[in-house]
Image (tube, rainbow, N blue to C red; front, side, top):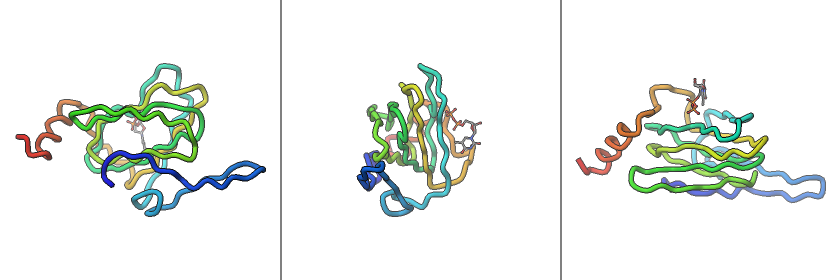
Length: 138
Ligand code: TYD
């Protein structure tokens, strides 16, 4: 599925503490090339406000909660992540931001490529134009 969606990771319930996991190309719909994480976010801060030309990601709230706001150039969608066994798949060419971080929240992000600053679209009007071209509106 190339639209944003929630992924339910396996959850091994155990009296000693629960365990969840994911692997490339099964629950995560791509081969994982990179992981990074966002933490110690001061109250009210916003991270990750941009789009990617090619990169796909899955975001997991390993601890605490935060909101991921997605915009496909036409509509805005809000996903609240607050369970460590759920992930949010974000396809390429999706404007996004992460906000409303709770105290001590920890966002783990896995992606299908290594870090490439050229893949970033940081200007919303450039993103809108690119979406219009891709959708054949222009
Ligand atoms: P960035 O993705 O621009 O975060 P935000 O959109 O929240 O500002 O990343 C911030 C900085 O971290 C930027 O200077 C690039 C660096 N960075 C890496 O070196 N490797 C990575 O994998 C990521 C995600 C960021």
